[in-house]
Length: 188
Image (cartoon, rainbow, N blue to C red; front, side, top):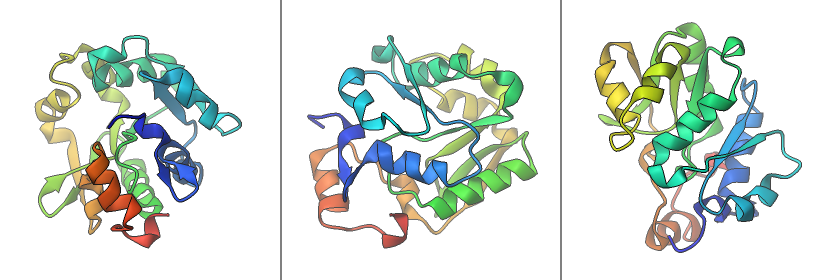
């Protein structure tokens, strides 16, 4: 991307602030932000927000290392699962996040994944029963390997939001979806 994705803007908020704002309005007990590359540059953008910041010193090992760092920082006795929301998928609506959480609350043993027209997207909710599997997953395969291995625990939540598939990881994607406003206004 050329700059930290977490600091890209949707109107006046950074991607990270936008996601935190949505999560703050949901049934999310604690919000943990895992930072890796550019952590010191990103951290001030969340000062004063209702989050715990966790630094992944091994961020070069990929996204799964950040997920594991986050899992290691939480008190597992007080959680049933974790909602994992990559910062480069900021266009998901609060309505969908609420649906994901409600689905999980009705069946906390399931891995909840949103699905648009046959394709799975983000964010995802992992049940506590899979935390150790995530920790043991190969870093090069990521959390996806756990999803495939425990397919019987997956609940696919059908959605009309294509935004679950939109990964803003290039300047061109940012230009298309944010600068030109090609996304649903309900997401803001």
